[in-house]
Image 1 (tube, helix red, strand yellow):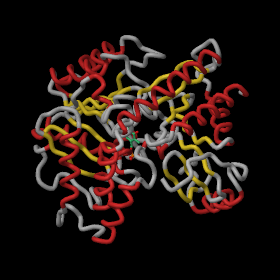
Image 2: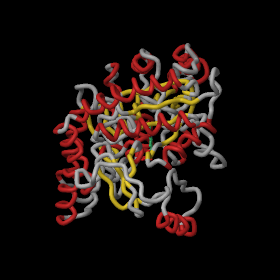
Image 3: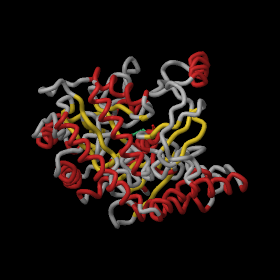
Length: 435
Ligand SMILES: *Cc1c(COP(=O)(O)O)cnc(C)c1O
């Protein structure tokens, strides 16, 4: 780790040079591309990001659960540097190369279930989800897709349709894709407590189980607010799918690659998906995503029915191999669990001091607090925004989430040094006290 692992503020946040760049951004980039924290980054590694004004911020975001192994992780740098000098692209569908096959072999081996699997590579989480739906429809000859309240699956036409939240993801972007149905999620803090029964009733009575190609779910809802479904919910949904010939798709785009204290979040309850979508943490920030699934489902699609020009780019494949090596060499699954063991008790203690915290939840290094009007469950988005601002001003990068915009989520790189983790929590606690 070449960057000093310290928080260091030398200007206000954002500093003058970042403000200059922000003005240029506003003149060159549409406002639709939002900015969480307008500091422009020049270097990042370990648990910090360094900006153009010389500030070093504690990173509780990891580029939205992407740099699990840290930014510019040594093995990633080494493998990608070598690859960029050898060749940068052939298109795997034109003339293949070994690294793509190796990534797929690893995914087949490491994802839940010891059945025969196939994988292929694309560029983004949304593209992985789109492809999983294509495959499920093709394999079943059915059309309906069932998704859940609070779900997030991307920003393309199909995936924004699959996404629950209107603003900002869907608003005025209709008409949406057909044959998408939404059912309740077991959300322990807000209910409903009979989400499974309601979901099955809707599938059977409103859609018809025999019309359903796929049920698509995030094992822990990410953008929806780090909602960990009630125990038993996921396995029961998976069982229902198996009994009805429905393809069970796990969207592990945010939860994958050691983030939750397992290599994949489905492992926690022993759930084995038919198809699994991965992206974010897969390649340390190089654009890569994958669909992995049962060979008999994946192999149904005709030659040429799947693919894309850039999917499984050789640089991204080398990065993915480096990520998997790093996760194993540094036992980042255990690191994620340790992060959870540090964060959860401290946040629980804050919850007992500050009644504005309604709920503390998450697993491993995917942790969140949900903010409410004290003494109620009424979402408190205003306090959430104020808290984020206060943390940012102190050099702690945090992200929000949640259907009601009232969740503060923490996604530190798994290689974050513990002193920075503690310091970040201290900043949060101080900000809560001042709120
Ligand atoms: C981020 C995300 C996506 C979309 O991934 P992109 O790479 O942004 O297209 C899909 N599903 C989940 C659960 C995500 O968190």
